Length: 127
Image (cartoon, rainbow, N blue to C red; front, side, top):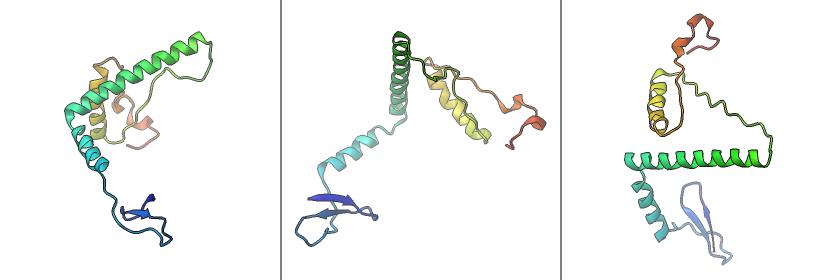
């Protein structure tokens, strides 16, 4: 028996009887339990904890990559200068800066270069 998702969200189940797929919803215990587990993770406290776990994993991975590259003398085009986030909307920038606080407070350096640093006449873009 094979299962394929239809465009309408209802799974088609091919019974292999030569009559083509039937259009009956496929339900099973894993689907309901997965939804409950997902919803349990959708709280501010869990989001904070999960963010910090991902941050520690990313920091560990970067350290290990650097150690291996140095030990094995691997030369590749890595960039340690950081990332640049551009915001057109001041409200979205403020929200982004607010989100940075959690990871910045846990060892990830972030700085904000306010758009006020550039005179309006010298900006090649329009905000």
